[in-house]
Structures are given as structure tokens and as C-alpha cells.
Length: 157
Image (cartoon, rainbow, N blue to C red; front, side):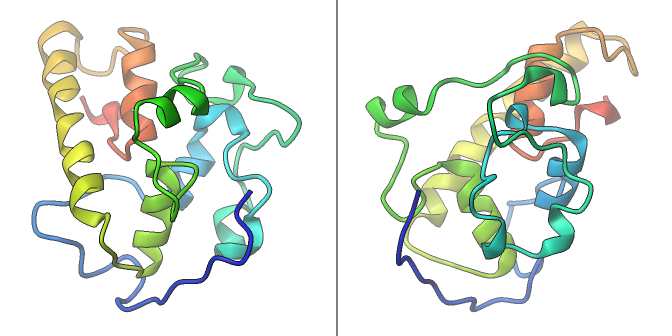
């Protein structure tokens, strides 16, 4: 999907995140748990560490919600994200692609915006705590899956 794009890794992998940006899951953990119906980034595995994909739940042929940890579709089409202006040229697949590269050590001009978007998802954690019994993974599965897509681990709620 993205040809000829290069970037510098200026921080150690998984370290030196911006203050207040504390994802609960690594990209590797997210891929193993099951995110984005297994379709996301199946054509760019060479860009990222091979061990991220070793036990990842992937489906290069199509989006398969059954591969998601909570077994539901919590994604919106990329075209919708593009129409809303949430996709920028350096990360044409959006937040998760940005997060994978940020996790590797890339820092750039879009970091503040993406971290602000990540923070905005915290409101869903509060809704989960208010409306679901601890450990009741059947409660609000779409919301749980959406949180997972943003590196929040609702299994702890």
C-alpha cells in the first residue's frame, strides 16, 4: 500500500513515549489477541519485527471478525477514515500503523494528534467500568474490541 516510504528510528523500541501516552498493549500483543479482523497490515510484515507476526491472528484474504479477540466487527471502512481526514500520508492505514512505527522508535509531526486521538478513547473505559461487571467479556463486546484496536486492554476491567 505504501511504496518507498522511509523513516528514522530515533528512540529505543517500546521506550521513551510521550508523557501521558501509556498504551496497555504492544503491537505484538494486539496482533496475537486478534484485531482488525486479521486483515490489517498483512502486506507489510517485512517492515516490522518477525516475532510480531509469529502467532498473530491474520487473514490476508479478507476481514474476518471471528479472528478478533471479542469475535465482533468493531472497525469502520478505511474510506470513512479517509473522508473524515483522520488518515495522513505518512501512515495511510491510520492509527495502528502510526502506533507500530512509534513503538519501533519513529517520532514525527503527527505524534501529538495521534496521541490526542488515543486519549479520547479513554471515555470508553469509564463506560465499561460503569456498565459491565468485572471480567464479563460478553458485556459490550464491540466497545471492548474497539478499545483493543487502540491498545487498551479491557480484559482488566
